[in-house]
Image (cartoon, rainbow, N blue to C red; front, side, top):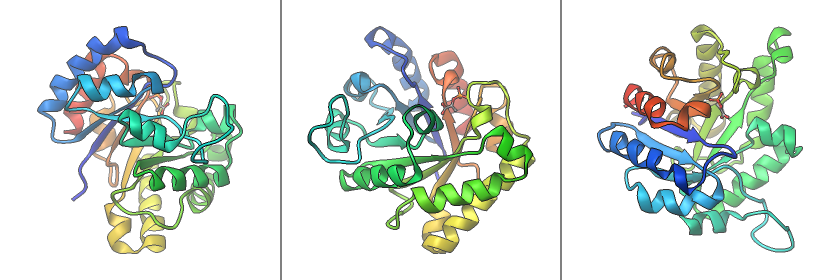
Length: 245
Ligand code: PEP
């Protein structure tokens, strides 16, 4: 039985003044029957860890190397040291803005695992790729090349995030989400064996909000959500937490 995951991605938003929102989310997390995670800017990881005991702290990226001459970067050990338990890797915004390839995402995932972090590896298609019926090929290719061999149900979460749904208010139909999540499950089982393949959580991300969360989370193989905009305010995120848990 996979426990649902309500994961917020704050992106480049949030300062310490926003921790009152986190305190309100912490109350909802206390009575939730799901894992509640906030992937915040590195400057806030420590504060989340301290101020919100019911919320797991996470980061949004880490470098593939353990240390060295990489000005401005942050290592997996460093985010772990700050209190993070999870890290988002291969988000489409990083793939687009920073030219991150599948190979790079795979290296970062290995670095995260070596530091003891759990990795949320993001995959997703563009609108053109969906329109030309290439969605499953793209997802399969990203999974094969971005996810390293040592995956387990403990160290990996796969996030299906159609790029055209992120921050747009658009979402795939529940049938389309189900098709991709079932496909990801089959690929995980084939590659890692049934036991591991069935235990890895697959979360949906892309304009998930208080209105659509119940419908989306009822779809087969949807084990929670990776939520951007709607994770910034407690009024929205608490509704999502309650719907998932
Ligand atoms: C995201 O950035 O991972 C995301 C899903 O954003 P939003 O919920 O705002 O579409």
